[in-house]
Length: 139
Image 1: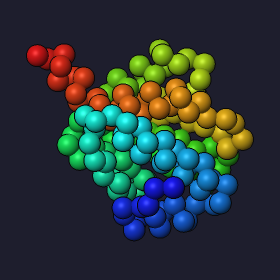
Image 2 (image 1 turned 60 degrees about the vertical axis):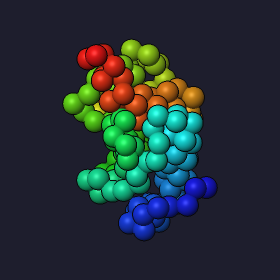
Image 3 (image 1 turned 180 degrees about the vertical axis):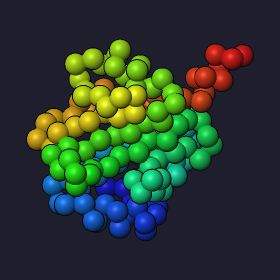
């Protein structure tokens, strides 16, 4: 497991119930591995946004990826993307049967279901490189 770069984020993960913590730590590792595999992303800042663990390229190559579990929906957890982008709509087109979608902002996972990590890695990469792609379209 990658060490935490933020004590606030580490505390947030420690506060999750153990079964949820394991699931969210797996998502965290996938985000960090995906970011490390894309040279254009560079270093990723690990922080809290809206009280949720969040990962954003320090070079602003892409959009923030967040994740969280809510006590009001204890059987699920989610990965969140910036709702003002077309990211979730794109994921819905690419992976219509792989994920449950929440509007234009989230992919939702049940605690008892297998997460399609390969497809999710594609989604994470798209978010972390979102600004690179949009700046190429405007040139």
